[in-house]
Length: 174
Image (cartoon, rainbow, N blue to C red; front, side, top):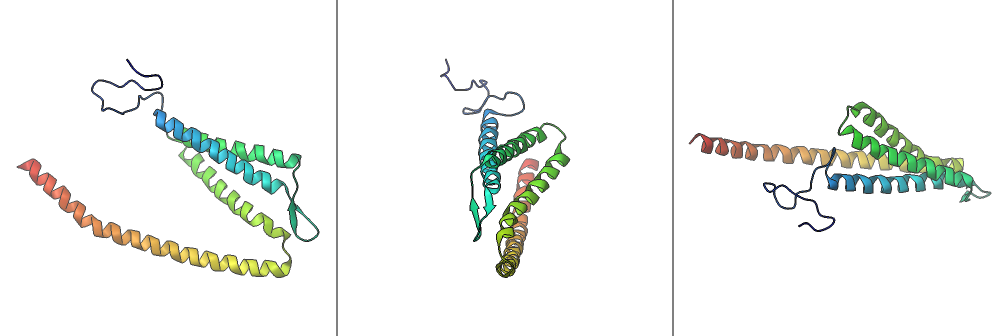
């Protein structure tokens, strides 16, 4: 007898395993569902807020309108479709399409980040660009430092992994 909502497992399978159905497990489906819904909500919110951003007398303001709803719908659709593409790429040969979609999302996020800069005056814009350049330099240096640390740790752990493999091979031979 199984409880409602629990998966049946084979008698030879380890306890706690999830029954496979289709292309992925229940956990994978749940993850993709949560990821796609939360991404859709986030993308919809971002594009909806970009659509409601308008130039005011002093700087800019947010004005809710039909454009806000259209922007939200487009963003939500893009977020949902991206995760649908991710789930399909595991089963189909859509690797190139997934890469192109990821690059387009990256470019779109940069565009969304830079979009509000059009509301700044030219004096303030120069200062903002200086700050963005300084931020890019600092983050790039931090990325290089983290990359070098990872390489060091990988190189340091490689001899230990070789020793473990040699000892396991020697035990099999004996």
